[in-house]
Each structure stands twice: as C-alpha cells, then as structure tokens.
Image (tube, rainbow, N blue to C red; front, side, top):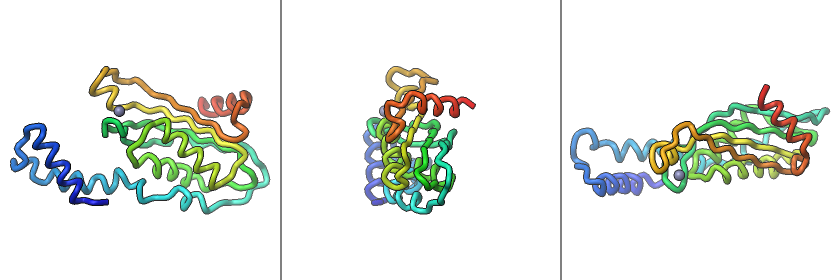
Length: 184
Ligand SMILES: [Zn+2]
C-alpha cells in the first residue's frame, strides 16, 4: 500500500472541500487515514486460498452453516462503508474447513472496495475453488451508508444478495433448508 499517495489524496480532498489543512485538528488526519486503510483495506494483500487450505476429513456430507458473520466493507462507487452480516452454507464433499476460516474468507473480500453483489459471489467462488464442496450458498444483508447518509437517505434499508453454486443451483428444497437454518 502506498501511504504517501493516500496522505496526498486526503490532503487534496480536504483542500478541495475548502478546509484549512494546517489547522490543528486536521494536521494528522492524512497520516491517520493512511494508517487506517492498512487495516480496512487489508483484503488486497490477503488470500482466501491460504485460509481455506487447512481442511479436515468428514464421513457425513451434511450441510454446514456459519451465520451472523459481521463484516464492514466499502462501496466502490462512493468509498462509504456498507456493513451487515453474511451467512455461508456448504455441502461438503468429504472435507470441511475450520469454522473461523469461514469468517476469515468473508474478511478477505470485505476489506476491499466492493459491490455487495460481487462480494457475495467472490465468497461463494472461493469456496467452490478451494474446498470443492458439492455446493455453496451465500446470503449477505447489508446497510449501505451511500443509501442512508446521502442520496435518497433511507436509513435502515437493507440490501440482500444471494448466490448459489453447485447443487444449490435450482434446488428449491436445499435452498429452503438454507433459509430454515438461517431463521433458527
Ligand atoms: Zn455506494
């Protein structure tokens, strides 16, 4: 990550807005924001494959769901946060991953500038490519700050996106199982 470019960019935005970048409260802001992006955009230097590499053998290929995975991301159109939670379910094909690695995979893709639709698909695709389960289904519900603090200003609006891969595709009964587990 190029910290100098981020600092310069923040200075330019503040100047562009008409702020005095030399007043006390703003002096360290460019530096602070540059360091903040190291954390909030850490997904660019992270790799889902590395987290999904460690797998465990299982005899039963029953559905596994991890839900209420809270995440924060940025809308790439406005650079404002969107945040909410993700649920991921997969039908193993003889192997499962550690539960914490499921949440890790969400982080890898959330800590980038994103579209919610792409975030949902990238998580599903990472599972299909690395774990090679029989199928995966991902549901994300999020509130977008670009909808709530600007534009049409509709606080509380949630955007829901769903992606299915493998045997979840066009399989209504499996999808219904997913929604039942999501509700319980
Ligand atoms: Zn937006």
